[in-house]
Image 1 (cartoon, rainbow, N blue to C red):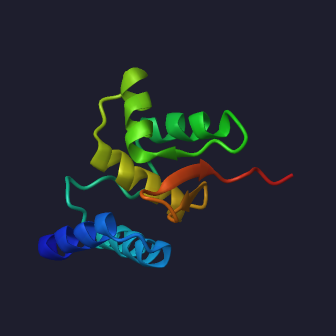
Image 2 (tube, rainbow, N blue to C red):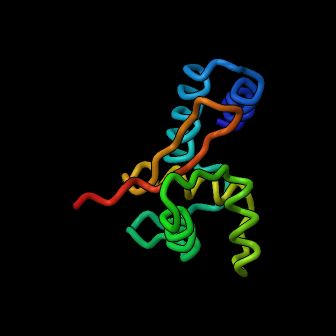
Length: 118
C-alpha cells in the first residue's frame, strides 16, 4: 500500500487536472480509511479534540476555506500537537462525516464547513 500511496501523492501533486486531482484525493482517502499510513486513529466516533476546533474555525466566517497546511499551522498556534498528515486524515474524516466540504479544483484541497441547515 505504501508504494501506491507514494505514487498517488506524486501524481496528485504534479497534475493540474481538477478531475484527476479529485479522483486521486478520493483514492488517498479510501487508502487511509482501509490502511492508515500512520498510527491508527479511533473509529468509534471519538474524534481528536482538534477536529472540533478546526470545524469551529471553519464555521467562524461564511465562505472560509483553508488548506491543510494552513489549518495545521492555526491548530499549532492554538496549542494542539498536530502534523500536516494527521490534519489531512482528520479533515477527510470530517468530509466523510458530511461536516466539511473539500474543493479539489486547485493546487491543493481546500476545506470549508458545510452550511448548517435550518
